[in-house]
Image (cartoon, rainbow, N blue to C red):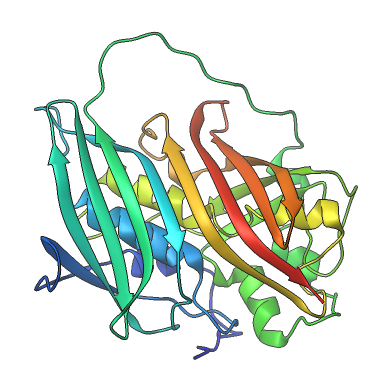
Length: 311
């Protein structure tokens, strides 16, 4: 089912908030259960970040967080097994695998229409003293010098882009996105190199999410927004824009490591998402990405393999 994207809607980060707002449910298979509803998009299947972020939220709601032996999500590994219907309920069943002194582990399985569509393992750490190191961000133009997706697409058309997909790319995703060297919506704008950078920022300040602390909400936001563009460096190097006729993509598996807890208000400002293509072949591609704050703090690392079919 395709849920229309409103052309007159004001861009808002509430799209993300709705995706990670969970309702408690009676568990049917494991220890704890929640439900969430996938958000509108113009494609035949729901956005993969809906599943990752909702699963992260479900896992985090089962692990105490705080100064007294609380633990924070530090890694998450996911597999996408079936496409999810749009605008429909997904059940997230959480298995409490282990609670140790320093680490806790959760398995989350997502079901829709009675069938498993997604599975993830999430690990939580209390943290301890140790050495520190972080790679620095690449040099890229300031986001204020780059066009928004809406400005870039304003008078452009072509390929398989529809009115709905244009509205979605422009303002329907909850986050403003600005590319360097340029977007890959209609054509590969810029060099066909295996790397790019995307500045991302919520269209408005992130709202509180019931059941999540501010830190948990911000980690869910990172896991939500990362999936939009992680395969783009692979598309870029292959010369395949999103609107290429016959192009079909799908997330296959996904890994994410959260290195540092975002400070207050960090997720409401611009984040640099530095990305590169790791490999392409046999109808699949691997994209890698790192999130940095405006002042260069390395927050998280993402690796994803996706199906890429170009007829």
